[in-house]
Length: 239
Image 1 (cartoon, rainbow, N blue to C red):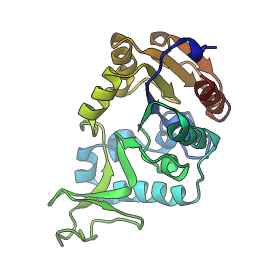
Image 2 (image 1 turned 90 degrees about the horizontal axis):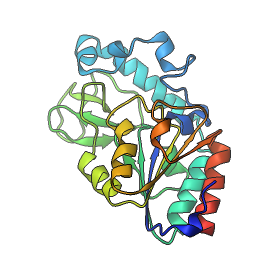
Image 3 (image 1 turned 90 degrees about the vertical axis):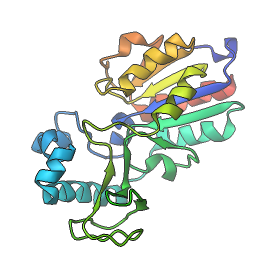
């Protein structure tokens, strides 16, 4: 266990992955019983898949959006919101998740590097629109009026994640980097710990099981996020 009192921590960067949302009941992509079980990711999460069978892609993301309505933030989401509100320095939260559980848990700043379920992207005017309803190939863009140009505002395989320059600036100047519930299997996020280490930051991983990049962290805390994250936040605020 770290003694954060012995370190000068002014800027914290936190990366969250599917593990934190799974404890709220959202299915993950990589677990054996997760979202990939009945879907080939190449059939639902690539630009080519969307061009080939948009109806299938729309059905998949519409179902995920509906599931989100019935899902509530958990104690880990709420603890991170408390850290953002109470920590005397800066806490920058970046998530690989496309749900809005961090926001509903109280976080005022959340960087969604892979897009958001409750958002649509117009391929014609490039507008990003808040979107709560089901989406289809017949949906009209409310920004430009184009018909059939909307797609889920999700970063698919083969596409560049959002806000990479901003994320990089925060990682390069942070004192503490924490990854929570990430698989370490998807780049560029899997490389963040290496960037933070090179910048001289302390690095901590919180995960239910060993990830593909666990050995890159200074410290690993193994356990469920709803237990480990509140404990970690308590230590940081005490320090």
